[in-house]
Image (cartoon, rainbow, N blue to C red):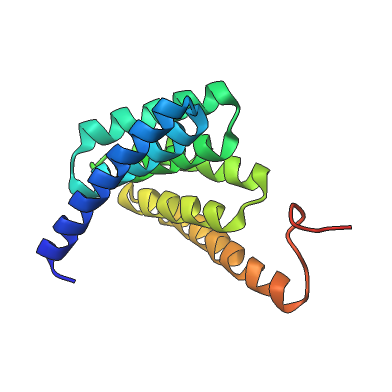
Length: 163
């Protein structure tokens, strides 16, 4: 995929997000709005539109927090972590990355926690703290292997386990 192709895909995604935002607002769905805004924020990060990204992600966190939707709130924290790292603020990435990984751990979502730990590792690397980067990276690797081990052993995620 070329840079022009990627730019076109991001533009189309922006149009889709705008339609989704309109829809969830008309429906009065603050949780849906939080999830859409989180996606908007991450897309804006990847387009280099950092101010708009921050606004969308902070609004997503506010909506999710008010609604008590922990997953949307944690995903917004993860977006803020990516924003901080991408925009050159690894210290802020450490704060948001740690909050996101803690939230994902509390919810029992190891793959999302691994993603947060990977960003945290990159932030520690940017700050010159290779020991902390190695710890976060190793934790992420363990978490990425865990779901595969659960499936291979016949284990089920506790939320999905039935009677």
